[in-house]
Image (cartoon, rainbow, N blue to C red; front, side, top):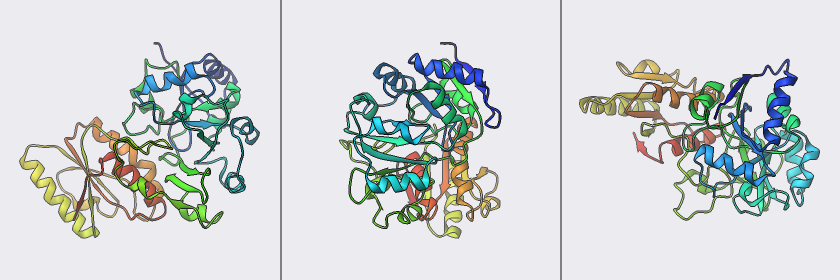
Length: 350
């Protein structure tokens, strides 16, 4: 397949490109496009034949539900049976933005989109380009991250091309993803609502709307084999680079000492090591490939840089990646959720 690659400027949208991309979606094709969380791989959410192509292009298991993206609030009504009061308040506060709500779906959404569930995740992205593409298509767009299943999600156009060139009809570039981690997912089919995937909208922010909202404890643990996911990213190993990832957890000074000890052991085995550090610690590792995710005082920069850093280690053919851990509080919960999944829950105490 010959993939077309174009870049859009969110301040000056090219109507011809938008019309072309919209037509690809209408014709049951696939388009990768930017959002503020990560780049998405989109198809017409209401066309079974189109949605199946997403799973094939990504190599994604079909029991992993997709998120449906809309451009405008009035587009949600035909897609869901009812909108609880708390969901309305969450939409009012956080849409457009990096938040997905799980609601009871109507028959308009095919079973393949929801992985056979009676509920569906719906999001209105903040990205101007994403919303313009949805409007141009004239239909809701089902879109997981625009990568080969299991790999770190792409936050820029180059990584989409790397993974999907020749597999889909169109790749649209734009800004680098601002959040860098996938959306927060809240299940609004239960009372109280429950967070099934942490993200840029933190639990503390959600509790301002409903103090009873809580995080499903299962998301920070290794899932059981026959677990049926209600939201994307709950069941399978995700965000994984080619090299194994090991997280070192503990007081920072001890973490640095433990990582340095592990580096020496791997070196003795002739292995090339990559270290995911922070601005506060990057100078404490010597003669090894070190990438700082940013400052521990700015978790937003750490989230934004996480997936790209994992991919950079792949580019450099490291044999093993060692990462410092982060406090599981606020946005740190989302960062550690992705890190644990990328490491297959391989955590070492310092």
